[in-house]
Length: 444
Image (cartoon, rainbow, N blue to C red):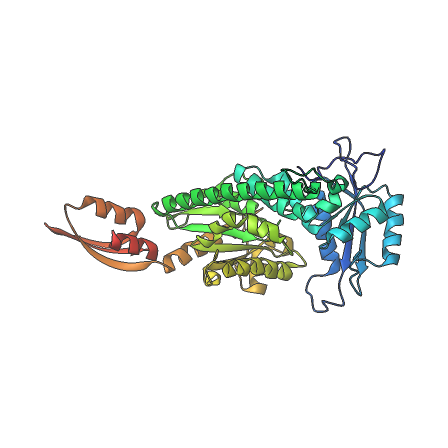
């Protein structure tokens, strides 16, 4: 059973309401409503205007046309509807007047709150989690990404069956000789969802094993890995393309990239590395997506260097930084990421061209700054990555028999030979190796 999803089409005009299905005839008219808990978060860095702009961007990412926005201060959360009665009535009038068919509430709604708002406004209502899941559902292109999105969607959908399908209260007949009441339709559908989730988790576990095999294969290749992380729309894919010459989708959209991409790059020293572009993070990332995309985020855990790409021109850049680091720190608790991940991180201040240029941003912040669009600062970034990789290498001394050409070739392939002395029987080498390569060579 599929849950209703947004697809950028216009809702059926004949019967507006929660069950109206979208078509492709025209863009859907949407309202974005932000309940702002300013009394609960007086020291929050995120301004309400920036948060609303982000929500509007999320709506635009799936083709919705936002015709109404509102920031509603909350003094207390209502368990039945989240918003106050007066706020609901006022927004209902705006929604009806503007022909809105989808109302996005930029908060986490319980199934009861979602159902009650749909009844009050006579239109489809989705919360922040549902909106992000719809974006991911449209953007995932690989089979792995599709599996991850479906698992996240089913996890979210399971708790909302009673809201979305009124027929689910019907009861199925009993089985067996004793008869009995049987199971209700909602129980049957929940069981089907559970069965599907078990199968998806099994398939994703196979994906994880396959990805692990790929990582082990890459470890046999003499290239360190560099992973790009950052808030969605910080410019990771544009930077990825600028550094690698690739043509990964890079648009001014939230979540333009969902599936990880890897390419080889050449550093100034001539050293080769593998650069990985990953999914963008966002504040209040749905827990269903954090769990589902763990296999993808494992690429970050294996990286020798993590480049945290920040949009330094964004008014909320500090809050975005905190959101990204919170997600990464959350991966430590479940063992996906090691506790020393900060030691491998380099912050990259992107979009410096919007703030007067790289030199000005670096002078103000003392950090590496770039413009992925203009290319300014990219050489300095490559040199910094090169130096960081070199700093992590260990100088080793080895004496090999002249006849052992295989080990000699391995050291040349995986390390940097800085000195060599040959005689009739032995070759003495001073070689710089990454610690993992040193351990592999000495154990094998």
